[in-house]
Length: 483
Image 1 (cartoon, rainbow, N blue to C red):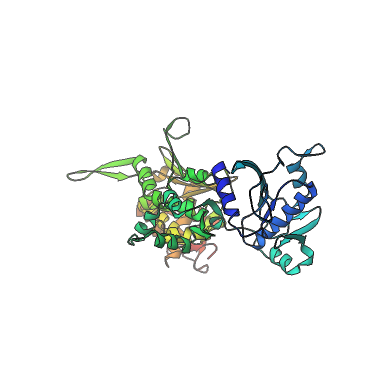
Image 2 (image 1 turned 30 degrees about the vertical axis):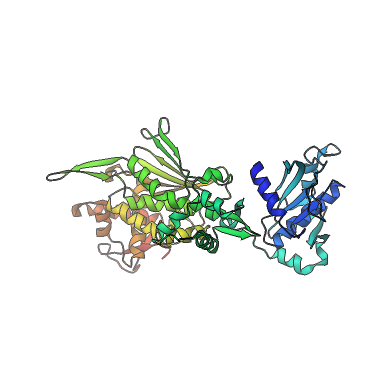
């Protein structure tokens, strides 16, 4: 946290009427054991109060909440040969994040421990669980109802609802967030007073109001940030677009990081990508017409999917679009929740709050209807099939430029056959030799070529015959193997 953020945090904590389950004020250090107990109790207390962090603050009187300053420097403190922070964390289970700050506040030295709230399991110190009851630290076993509540908490915090930044006033909200874009995207008139804007953003969980100040959630910042660099933990979630010369990464032409939130920046992002994508010039009867190499709806949907389905727990990385002479690669952090073979007909998002609002903004298609439109338009453009590559920590989707059928390899043809079969199935139709010939733009006299592709796809166990008792292959219809 930066100094300005720490000052705002202390301002917020001092607005509390007194110490509570997730905040402890102390003047000076007593013992390292006390700190270990406070870490356990405040982490558990923050969990019970639905706070993302607990705070142990030295230099503030617990009785008057007056800023007195402290002589305790935790970053300098050692227990034997161990640094205090390391000593405490070695005795804490499960491991949680504990950050220590020393700052000058109101001209006094303040030492602050920022303690991550536990989820799904009580935090213990030296094998004992502690909890705050009001302003008193007690053993958790004496309060079985509280202990049960911690155990039954979800093992995963919803990323979109975590606090990204605390601010003091509504002026700061409007300064940091593009509130106008919310109303523009929903075709609604902008309210005549700021209070209505703030109320709407609170109702949408973009911001939270607490004790007269505000907190911007990750959802609000990701969607509406005027500049994502204002949010330390989210700036790497901005979209990066790289254009290369040729078919490899040797020569970079452009390398651009986005700065706007996803909502106000999406249309500009898609336009930027389309402007630098290769295009073909087609000469008609009287005029020349520039035709994009890739269907715009495919670019739009795949980019939106990369934003929606990214795993935000993967730090230091974000969505990326890489443009080559012969393909475009769109990747996002995290591995898919469903097998790539079922992308066309299944849907599961790890970030449903983000997905829901992006659908309302018409930035992407309704649940489960996006990838099928991508595949449909790939076929209309006579492009090679979409390819999904699962890497160690990323999911990459590759959209290839036009290739002649003769230039596609066996894997490409099998993948195209399977995707065509699924597309037909989910539109209440069936794949046939004729429909696949039309997909590849192959003349009827070359039907045997398509029969061979169908046979290879069948042998790869991607498809099956609809009527397995049918002896005639000429009029056979095919459905996905899982249907």
